[in-house]
Length: 369
Ligand SMILES: *[C@@H]1O[C@H](CO)[C@@H](O)[C@H](O)[C@H]1NC(C)=O
Ligand SMILES: *[C@@H]1O[C@H](CO)[C@@H](O)[C@H](O)[C@H]1NC(C)=O
Ligand SMILES: *[C@@H]1O[C@H](CO)[C@@H](O)[C@H](O)[C@H]1NC(C)=O
Ligand SMILES: *[C@@H]1O[C@H](CO)[C@@H](O)[C@H](O)[C@H]1NC(C)=O
Image (cartoon, rainbow, N blue to C red; front, top):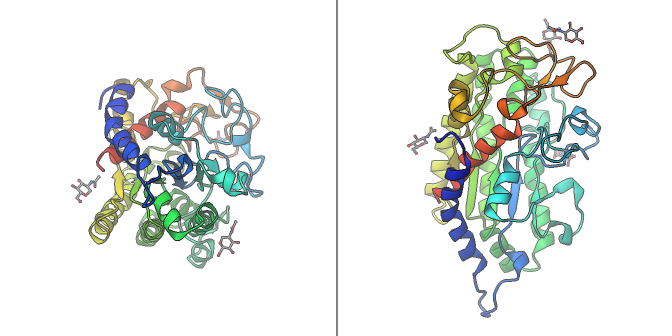
């Protein structure tokens, strides 16, 4: 991976742009060119790593620290509802693919609001249903699961297309982005005192839920689907603070990275099975894990500073600059002078600089179309 993502991103784009242009040029049986609104848009699913505004509206999380400065300071100049100092990976995708920014689902009502695509991702969302997690002894915080997002999508599709044919055509020319899902399930299980081995028992359930969601997208006519891998959990400041010991050469926790790799093997295998079962659609795997783990192991090569395991914004200093009771945006927390030198923004979420690398990993996944 080259040190700066602009060039590889631009090269990888070619394949995707061609595919999108072909979709836009699709002619319906009557010979008329598709209306622009039936062309190219993004439907996104996920949690805070993909959310562009839903958690700021969801009553459970509205007014949270991420709705205050310094969130948004680098790019928007004000909090934008994104859990970062600036743009998140979907913003870079939209920019590079020249697609409209999808409307956060909770910010829209009508078909007109949703015609440019929809972002269903909600900060704090779990893959699994809260009722299931509670039955496993896991305390949950935000009562939105991937099933909720899938049902919202199915409702929006009904709103957007007046006929089954029109609806399928719209889905066929759209990009479906399955953002990372499962982090909140695993984190909440760890907070509920499950051991890492017990949490590993949730992986088949989490990946099974992702499989169901992608199957629903394909059933609606989706052809271009990309799912992002689990991030390196063992390199995340908040989890490093919780789990001293078991460090690798980069300072990451080997057991938590093992959990992420277990998830990723199951996800990768599930996507391969879905490709075999649905040859017309090709759900693809985006290796965000490999990109981020490489950046943490060799930060200078990616333009980061020499503390890739520390949060830019937080309190407490030390190796991780993370304190759950003095979170970024809380009194007593401070932000670093140069967020672009950090991988982690607030100890849980990524800086805009790291999100650009995540976007290039997703574009690489998409280019394998
Ligand atoms: C999510 O789904 C659950 C279970 O079906 C339902 O009870 C809940 O109201 C949904 N939540 C939202 C925010 O739609
Ligand atoms: C987890 O363990 C801690 C410390 O023993 C305890 O205070 C906390 O209540 C436990 N949490 C749950 C959800 O059981
Ligand atoms: C995903 O699976 C394919 C085989 O289907 C394999 O070639 C590839 O290395 C796997 N990638 C990861 C990151 O596990
Ligand atoms: C975390 O922050 C709280 C509140 O500011 C403080 O009382 C506590 O000592 C801090 N803990 C650590 C480990 O720095």
